[in-house]
Length: 217
Picture (cartoon, rainbow, N blue to C red):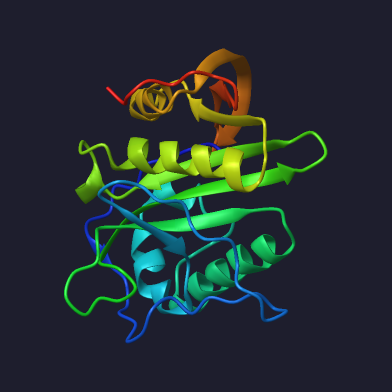
């Protein structure tokens, strides 16, 4: 299980493309259009994002979320390559969350965080959500807005029915994001995660395609 997390790094910036997004799949086709979120830009990760990814995973807290060490630009590039490979295999859809594009920033502005739909199961129509934000982006509704957009996208574009997420019980900020994005609490998984010598309980949330979700509070 991948839990959500929040970065404590400072600002990180993405590279600037000189043209619009050029992401294509291995077979030359275009991927699904990214989710649309008010006041934000969501797009697929690109190779020029490596410096921003490296900065995002620089703290011990965020290093736990990366799945593998990301301590060099080469490792950050591999992390991005892994995201693309998982997408092309149909297992995952991971998006960079950026401030709105300005001027000639065709690929978007400053990196704010990430939202990911993983463990996609088209048979049971389920998926697992994870998200993180940089310290500079907290307290502004970035994670909630991006999460709501990803959930709606998952239901409409992928025809999923049930989305799940989990967070450590000592991470109330992540819990607030989940609630505001319409993910209801479903239970507690005792001692689900181990970091170092300590184990952590995880609270599980879920949202169904049929759930009525109001405006974010």
